[in-house]
Figure 1 (cartoon, rainbow, N blue to C red):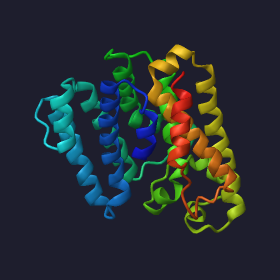
Figure 2 (tube, helix red, strand yellow):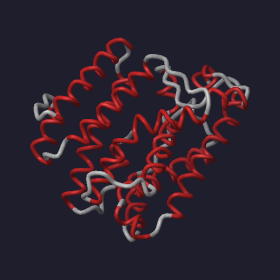
Figure 3 (cartoon, one colour):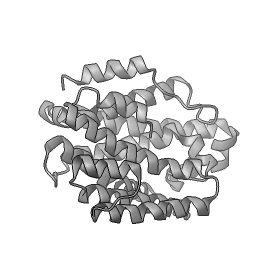
Length: 264
């Protein structure tokens, strides 16, 4: 969710790819901010509906928002970006409309359908191929976004945006209001211990199994994965106090991770 993470993740990309990655991420940040910052749910859904129309206008070469206008003028090839923005706006709208994630499979499907097309665009920028085989980046994108849903847990809860499987809350004898209030902390910590560890393990597994050439091709995404993984470790070290504050790495830590990852 944070632009700062992506700034450092893309720091050692080639200049043109770096700027295109950042332009795509700026669009993502713009849309993802709507459910978090617009207090009236119906107004937020109207804004997302506008973005759905804007995605079609971008594909047709007639964008209206400054970010989409700049992207169209600079990079031209906009069909994949337009479809990705439509998927993102539709997924966020369904969330505001009260969609339920009963199981982990439901959770994965929502994250893949909502954010997956945007990560596919990032992958195509890295390889300069429009349709890219999902050789590691797709699952990584899912776990990056699940990681952010844990790191931004309280802001999401305050807007009634539920991105954890309901079955997992039930297994921990935890209720959504416990996360907002900090009540029943033992259950909240138990829930977050499991969710954070699962997310960390999946990110680490993808990063560890990916061959060096793949990590170099998708340097921005793999570096972002490492930043999210390390931030989740800080959340663990902080005692999983998601009801109190959000944990974030210092700029120096992010820079250090980016420098280490530039070698693939």
